Image 1 (cartoon, one colour):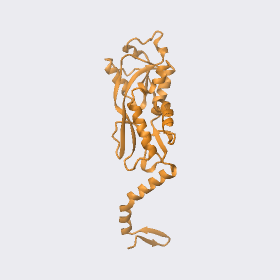
Image 2 (cartoon, rainbow, N blue to C red):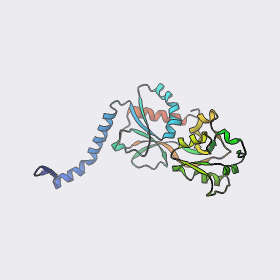
Image 3 (cartoon, rainbow, N blue to C red):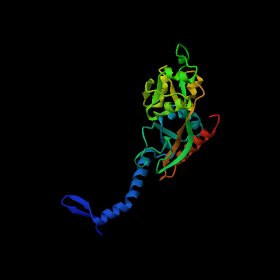
Image 4 (spheres, rainbow, N blue to C red):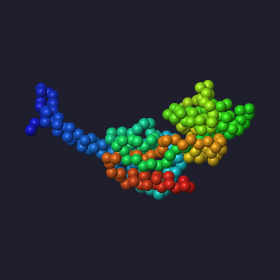
Length: 249
């Protein structure tokens, strides 16, 4: 049976060839994906991980020394996540996503939900616009993260405050930038309290009032459901989940 036909200097698939290609395409894609991973990380103890930036710099990085101490034979290659990973055509082994957990074709491990609280520089507690009650929020610039544009509206509703279209605001593309602006005294930001442990400890930021907004999103460790985790992937997954379940971590 002929799978190809030649016309001058070109080669084309026959009808039988096209049917055969459709039948084996998935297997070929899996071989290509496995080859990419092998070329990028021939050592099963090497793990390429993409992580949402704020979680990477503010939660994961301060704890990496503990992982290195426990698993010196595992090399982590970390990068900031810029969008959903195409695991079939990427060198990334695992990723930490923030969202609703409804991604298809992925093995997901729930880490924890996120709840945001209002925070600001201690400098904003002084002066004529000092913050004494939630109503004083209206006197200040509110710092937004573009992908979480409704959170301040929800906080105001929770506090029994009316929202005004004239409310001053400042919007940033990511959490780290928003928190940097808050530390500079440019306004009040919303953040997951576990991502600002150091800033709260050192007095760079303070938490305002007894306000907390439970979001519908959470942090998840994800990887393709088509592959068997390597030794390095398993060690990182188990360590990460243990850290999440440790009340002192």
